[in-house]
Amino acid sequence: MSDTTSDTMPIEDYLAQGGMLTSPDNVPPRYRGELLRLMASFIDSELAGSAGFADVINDAPGIKERIAAARIVLEKADHAGRVLEIMGSFGADTARYAVHHPWSARLDRNADIGAERRGGDMRLSVLHYPLQGWIDAVVMNVLMGKAVVIQLSELARVSYQPLAEVFREILPRETHHAELGVEGLKRIAETEEGRRAAREAIMYWRPRVAASFGLSGSARYEMLARLGLRHTPNETLLAEWQAAVDAELARLNLN
Image (cartoon, rainbow, N blue to C red; front, side):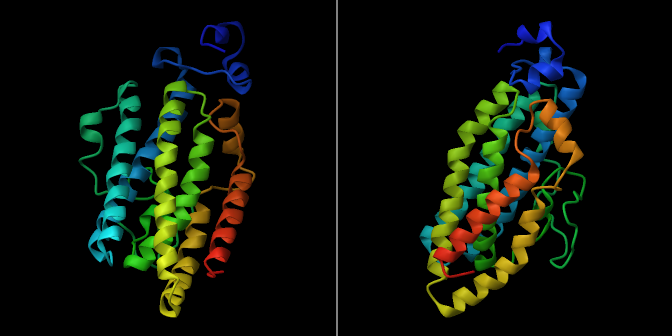
């Protein structure tokens, strides 16, 4: 389907049937607002994630781990930049977007904000919590990494074609980030002390990552689905993540 096809039917019908839009010039106001919100959430989450991991590079126990953490920091910032370019085509001030905000800012470790967004940006709520040492950072990367892969697979089907293409390019790199986390967690789980610390971190991070999938039965999801910006309900994505995490932790004897 093409933008031209959308001229012959209501835009929501066109999008709900799998239609794709390809240019800011063809985007209606409501769609534009939701698309910009989606992009802002991704960009802010990648910038906050990059800043958070930058703070733990020096906690890495070896050169290999340090390189892995640095790669995650670099590539998450690059991913934010790629999506920001698309936001720029809608008129966003890309020169100022990323440089005048405290992306490394975090709440108190014991704060409980559920899925709420704080601090004047659109990052996922889990990225408001501070990392606490290397093992904690690796566990968070494993749990959140698997969530990102599932969420990006959903976003790669978004009805704005230029953005969908960028998400499809980013997905393999984010998949590798999750794999790097699993490699690190496997080494940590080789000792009883490491397993104990990892299990404590899992208890802390698992509910916070789960909250990033949003509410079950969301009315907002229904609206986004009509615009072709979502395709799979929150509860289905959450269940997929839960199953993937359970399987991974079982392999590492960390359940």
